[in-house]
Amino acid sequence: MSADELGMTQRAMGEMVEMLRLDLTLSLVLAVVLGGAIGMERQLAGKPAGLRTNILICVGAALLGDLSVRIGATHGGVGPQPAMIAAQVMSGIGFLGAGTIMKEGGTVLGLTSAATIWVVAAIGLALGAGYRLEAAGTAVIVLLTLAALGPLEHKLLRSTRVLPATIRVRPGTELGLIERELLGYGVRVRERRIYEHEVDTVFELTLAGPASQFEIVGDVMRARPDVLSARLG
Image (cartoon, rainbow, N blue to C red; front, side):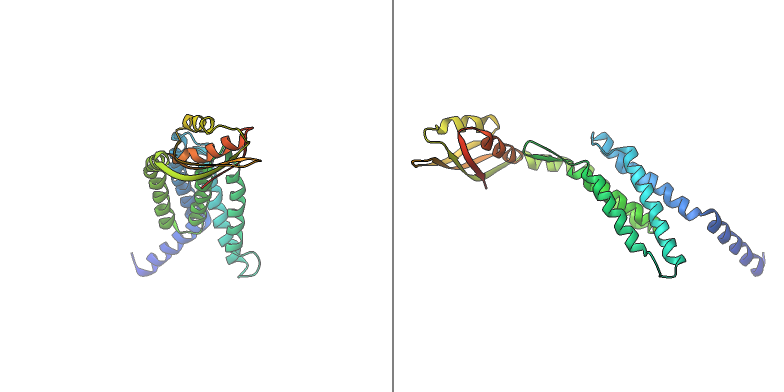
């Protein structure tokens, strides 16, 4: 094949790729694979945003990322810029992620799912902009973070934590009642100081127990009718 024929073949292939948008097709397929891998991990973990949700987010963000780049190139730098469109995509995804966050007692649930949705959208935008290697590397890091660090996080939450606490109660309230309720949540009183006043009694305590229980314990103490205020930490 001569040099002219080779050049014509290369130009024809380039025109075919441009016409069929094979580059976009590749980005969308990768969005399905990468978003699906992260979504599968979330699905197996029983989280609200699972396989289909993460695939749709990643594919949609990839399409919008490609569209933003093409709009910027078509208008020659005049009009909507790629960064502006990407910023709007991430803001919109933030609202979607907020829907997965719930407060149960003293514990906030769904923050990891919301962060996962946000980073999956970022991966999709990177794919749409043509940064496929960077997107794949980010997806691997996300999967390792979700799968490998989850057990470590749970272990840390179960670890013992020591915090000071100040609990104001109505006069005549016995410390033993407070201690028994704390013990029901796995929190023990290590040290105690009691200050009696005319209008209230103040318990200055040092508490020890599972780190995950302290926010719950604070809400439980404040809900007691004989407790005027409770401050932990």
